[in-house]
Length: 306
Image (cartoon, rainbow, N blue to C red; front, side):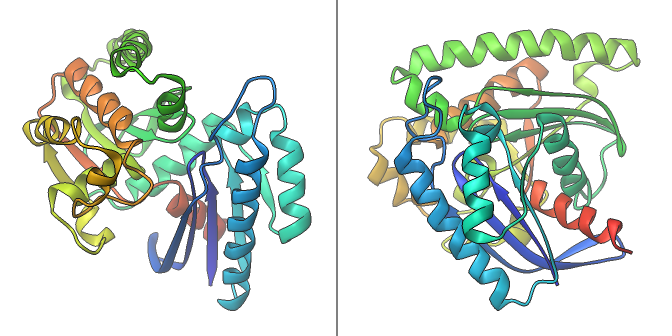
């Protein structure tokens, strides 16, 4: 049995499963919202309260791996660890108190694992795709032709940081627009150099924002990753959800079927990132992947020990 843990800026996620013929076969999945990037500052880095919450969650996941008799586990820390001045120090604490082999990975490596996981489940495989992974501390963009990665970027647009740093929706949307406009200038140039245009690209997204939007759109009372994988959300539905969610309080949002508790505030900046990118690409629908970095990590473990 293999396991992978993704320590993101908002959520710690554990996947236990096997790999057979290049396909991930999940046995069980556990997630804990610890909001590691909560109250983050450039000077101090990760806050004491956020570290305490996250270490507690790590200890729970480590215990779960022991109980499941996991033979091999890969554990990665992403944007919050990378960006914090005390990120490496906290990683050492996690390793000391949990014995988990936590490693801090770059945005480039994070994107590679994410793409591997997403592509393993897409049916059919699009000829050309832009894959977007919206995290708590950063968002990864990867341009693929089939299974070949042509270009990738990690930018510091994360839903936790956007939520905490910009209380004004208009200011937040302005920051998103500025960052994504610059990104798409580069993306346009890359596409032109390989004979593509933005209209050729199939937009695929993964991580909590889009899987929650898919669950909302299906009115899920119990989350089912099988239904979420390859689910297509029309642009009109996403605009509908923006209209519905905007005036609601956090508690009202989190009472909606499909909305995860703890994501009521984070859903808005994530949705704004997706809508702006769809506008830039002139695309009318979004394909959702529940699979991502966790499945990519499991695939890498399997491939390295065959």
